[in-house]
Image (cartoon, rainbow, N blue to C red; front, top):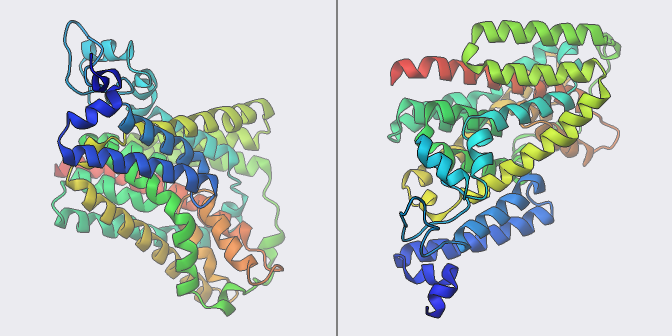
Length: 409
């Protein structure tokens, strides 16, 4: 045995095509960068730190020969995950060997992890602003869906099938679980790169959206206070909130049964919050949500091997993701200006960016940009209304795509 066979991670670099080997090195470095950016809070640490470690480990830890499975050996492999394995016998083999295969197969590749995250999101969402400001909140959320709607024809023009185009367009919702769920149903072959692109861009929103707000909204409007109205002092009772949860869940499941797992997860999580069930709240928020988020980030990193990025469609997905999220934010801000006009200038158009359904990130971005100019101005309750409506409108649009697109394929 020579040294390259002994230290197989290094040896495998010399056993591959030089382009692939260079790609692995680049992704190892990128993984380290993501960890550091997450540590510095430039990017979302909850996703980026486990994702960066996973990306580094999968591209460094390639084997020259796989551990034998039923007498067969592969030239290059890893013992982390086999994402494209689908046969029952093959899955049983790799689940006994590959480190993360059981978690991937039983939670990631069937959409369960998306539903768990959605349940946790439901627990942390306050729907009172939605019931206080239903018209303005939903109007802004609908404008923010422009990114999702306009990206679909662009993606089809770039050569994607209707299912792939719809899954790529859902990146514009800025809702990772929604992207994962849609791509599993409509573009299973591309769901790994689509999900990776979506989560990479979600973290970029931290820096991209504040810049967009500064460009599109002048200072005097960003610092505008909203004069209190009668509805601002109205209290929404817990009974009204839980009735909304169960009625909305039933109505949306009736309309879009294919997205029923997402509706059930979100509204059940929110109902547990409204019913004040502290043990369940702690379980869903502190255990389920953070466990699912951790493994989601780690699995995304593990899936970032060089072969994933060798597909020429990935570059197109990077372009489409940027378009989808950019147009979504612009659409939301346009919606903010529309509400500003409807309310006779008694509104802050910065709230529009919160219509993009990355809860609660975009709502916090809106408040932060306002607070930076005038600490006396508080728009968070309005922003959270638009934010939660963004989650609901994104789930509705997902239901529409998943219902309609199969008939076009």
